[in-house]
Amino acid sequence: MDKILVTGGSILNGRVSASGAKNAALPILFSTLLAEGEHTFDNVPLLKDIESTAELLQSLGCESSRDGHTFRVRVSKLKSFEAHYDLVRKMRASILCLGPMLAKYGEAIVSLPGGCAIGTRPIDLHLDAMKALGAEIELRDGYVFAKADQKTKRLKGATVLFEKTTVGGTQNLMMAATLADGTTIIENAAKEPENVDLANYLNKMGAKITGQGTSVIKIIGVEKLTPARHSIIPDRIEAGTLLIAGAITGGDVTVEKCQPHDLDCLVSKMRESGFKIDIGTDSLRVHPQAKFDAVDITTAPHPLFATDLQAQFMALMTVANGTSVITETVFENRFMHVNELMRLGADITPKIQVAVVRGKPGGLSAAPVMATDLRASASLVLAGLVAKGETLVGRIYHLDRGYENLEGKLSSLGAKVKRVL
Ligand code: UD1
Image (cartoon, rainbow, N blue to C red; front, side, top):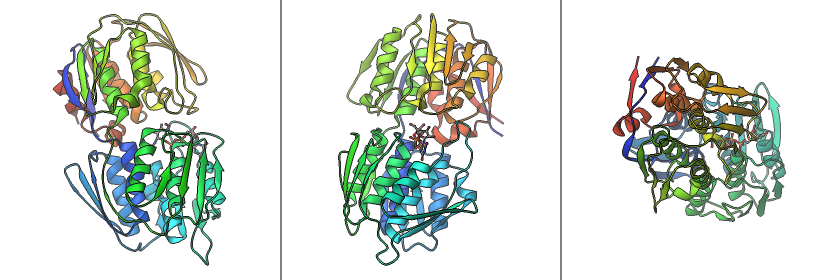
């Protein structure tokens, strides 16, 4: 199984580009189920999760092909409405085929996703939203059996208030509502840039969505959608990870091809910590900063601090001056990286959903560590960049789910990072 070997001590310098956003590409690929014909996407990252999505779409009867970062999906009438457990368990986002299949064909059978390293992550809000649009939902044999009105095969528009902000729940509902009969209003909708990108693609296909990027989204149902071409937005989490990589090594790194304002909260926290950051039209540059201060962060839905950057920011705080309090409010169990960072010498006290990080500038030293989830793996690589000696990060398949060639990108900036067997 692949591992990554990081030799600490190099100062990163130079320019590097962000790839397309995994979390925008996944829902957009599932949205193809809403329209028969050929869909074309540019800037699709080369990632395991994209392959898993393609596999699931193929199991339903779609065809897909890739030419570099251009990805095509050909949708004809589905041969199956069942998303099998073997495919869903690999990737929780597979639940996003529920809304589109239900809206287009009036039925869907989707495996329950099961456990996950970062918390229980139920799908009750997705199911309640489908019920609000008139779907009948039955949970049986580990699967969700969903049916729209069997005479019309259509869902019915409704007002849905999410009691908790949910990125995926908002996506599923937005997709389902595009072909529903009547108007749907989503209240307390997730405002993430990836949801805006999804809404933009749905609108390119002929949907009538307004309010994306705000907490109230309005969708006027239409009869039919038609495939279109779309370029996936840049990955803000990858961009933020690369910026932190520059910062933690005291380097001068410019991350290009990103949407800087998607990272406003990270930038303001890094500035508060003492970093000088330039914001360009589509780039972010961190200037060299030998000493920086600990700052507190609290994760929350966009535009507040992204939970997907919490582990990487914690790695930065392990070598800051002072004590940082990191509060995780989105997931109940997202501190799996803490014990691994402590193996590298970090001084962290984890409590329930709060971690107290006592920074030790220059104080990390290498050790073999284990990636536990996608963003946790990135935090271990970042910590390895400043740990004395050679840090071997195991279970790197987590990283391949969400980072395109991270070792190549870091190496191009001067890091000593390589993949080993
Ligand atoms: C998405 C992202 C993930 C990110 C997360 C929060 C993708 C593929 N994944 O995940 O990287 O960390 O947003 O920004 O885009 N919840 C329920 N019931 C539900 C749905 C969610 O209780 O039906 C809870 C979750 O357990 C979690 C919180 O709501 O505590 C937020 O989850 P949600 O926003 O839905 O995350 P995902 O869409 O799964």
